[in-house]
Image 1 (cartoon, rainbow, N blue to C red):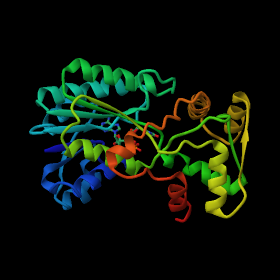
Image 2 (cartoon, helix red, strand yellow):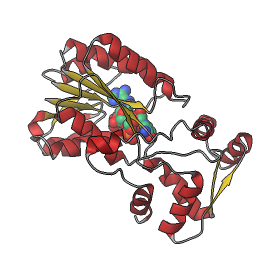
Image 3 (cartoon, helix red, strand yellow):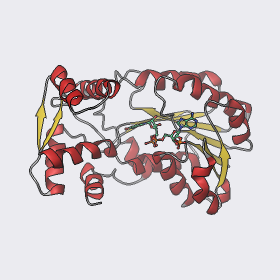
Amino acid sequence: MIVVTGATGQLGRLVVEDLLTRVPAEQVVAAVRSPEKARDLAARGVQVREADYDRPDTLKTAFEGADKVLLISGSEVGRRVPQHQAVIDAAKEAGVGLLAYTSVLRADTSTVAVAPEHKATEEAIKASGLTYSLLRNGWYNENYIPTAQQGVATGNVIGSAREGRVAAASRADYAAAAAVVLTEDGHADTTYELSGDTAWTMDDLAADISTVAGTPVGYQDLPAEAHAKALTEAGLPEPVVGMLVSIDASIADGRLADTTGDLSRLIGRPTTPLRTTLAAALGD
Ligand SMILES: NC(=O)c1ccc[n+]([C@@H]2O[C@H](COP(=O)([O-])OP(=O)(O)OC[C@H]3O[C@@H](n4cnc5c(N)ncnc54)[C@H](OP(=O)(O)O)[C@@H]3O)[C@@H](O)[C@H]2O)c1
């Protein structure tokens, strides 16, 4: 039995889809905090079980009979270490054979703002004694769809990433890697640095948007303070502004640029180019 937490999220749904191409539906458990959101999966034969990171009793039941569990990192930044600890404890109690976890690229040394929670979770997983696979995911191509839409509307993409590069891949690529680890042998106690095959700059991003949209879009690099001011004036809330500016600082620092090849090796094909993801999104 393979259990996927966060299975109604964007990545989780793609992992379940990939698993359904590899194993019978009755071997897949969608562990979700709102079972009503997973009715479509239940209709396809997937077992849907309630699993809320804030309610450990649900996790215990959700993991019964699980050989492998994928813990998809939660989305409530700042609350994730205790939430993930509850999942680890429940996996341990259930005698799970392998716990896979969606971490962040170079979690142990990264200066990306979200890294400390991932690092703490990785440490908790190792301390638990569970067999693990750490899927250190780089950035999603899809993170740049709103940027592309904004770029098409204004002719301009702004940022403070300087010449920094991003080795992004599509969510579906990361989902496929998780499905491989969950269905194939040989992934015990592994750490994968998963990222796109190509690392691109913000100038490259603007060029791809121009090509896909058929309209000129440029990249304007700003000092961090000016970037923050522009985002605030565009109406973004303060925590989001802080997060976006800090991400660009990490990109400028090369923290999301690693092209290790781990992802394409795991999935047995090249990763999805940024332009392909943008074309699919802007074509909608
Ligand atoms: N690599 C990147 O570029 C990147 C970007 C953004 C986020 N991330 C991380 O990767 C994760 C997966 O990405 P995504 O795109 O699938 O995000 P997403 O669509 O926001 O999905 C997050 C999932 O976590 C579930 N969740 C949140 N809090 C929970 C709780 N208390 N108990 C149980 N489940 C809970 C959500 O449940 P519901 O379906 O009920 O809402 C959802 O299924 C994110 O949560 C975040 O940690 C990575």
